[in-house]
Image (cartoon, rainbow, N blue to C red; front, side, top):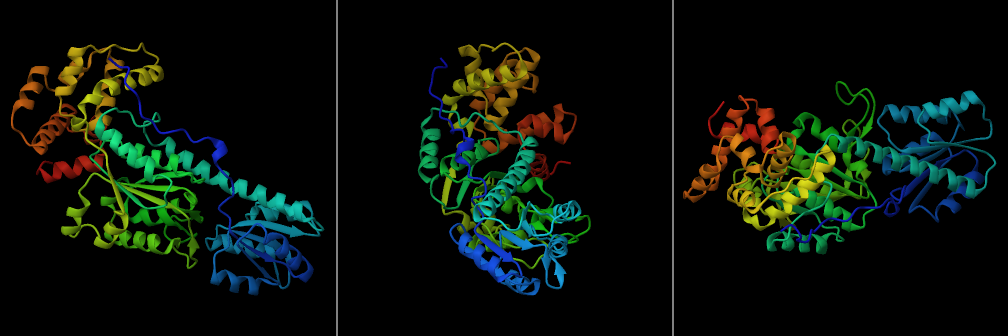
Length: 464
């Protein structure tokens, strides 16, 4: 009964990552013409743009014209210390990687350089291979910092790690489109109800894209509007109350990779304008900074709303909608692919039993028929929650559903009524909310949707 094929996204191996591959521009600041010429000739083999300056004033003029991924500076410069200059850049919100050079080093100088934000420290005289090694270490450090930040964010998110599961024609068609468009750089819009696997589809696209950067997800509906700009673009120190230090945004962390913007329909209109500008110009500007930074990020957006309808209502920018909707992939609702329920039950039973340390339960045909008769307003996420509840309580899926306020007979009877989907959804959500004593957070977790989505629906129904 369960020996149907599983369609899944491939794992991305560490060998596919190329630490530091996103550094394209470097600025060398040294008062010795020989050093400047030596480094310019050597670095032009590795960087698309190499600029040199003999003093800080010239360097600042160059920085105003373009962004540099890497700064290589002498510690002793005319009129001012290179350490002081870099420390000031950090205060202003600069996030460039930095390598210091010096012919006069001591422990105190080295400590000052590291405190100023240097990634490495190289002694003069040196050979080009020594500098190249320092640059490689610097790039690896930058990549490690970004990956660590992404991993910390992912620890706070719950998602299925085993890929997209299904054998129905709808899920296969969606997956064929995913595999076809994954290697292309185009922006993609994934549509579908909550819990249908939109983030899994986005992860599959990234996994097959060949992009070496990270996959960085953001739920636009879960982020306070006043913090969203800083979260996406970063900020300079002092840009707003509480900004005690400068920080890169998610666009920088996703450089060379993919930024997944879930619930894009929840994004405020003013932020939609900022996002449109980034998509068109491929540059970002951190909050409180006047420095433009180029980024190479693929955008995948997702929404459980009808964005075309939101455009007509004036709640979503028309120009952004057409910019995002270059290609649309629709993830089908579980009620549209009920032939996948047996496979999904087996998949979740095995994976969750291993995680919880319980025996793998069996599910006979009568239980599966009961599950197929249910409307599943929370889609695959709700099914996973039901299976986990069964493992925790040692009950069957039908008993779990009955515990939510409906019996098998009631469910089948309701399915036979000519009810619209929104009526079924409303009944189910309000019943779960009632069973949770009005606790919206608990009800949202049980339904497999965000609290904000639940609040929006309840408000639309005129309920408190």
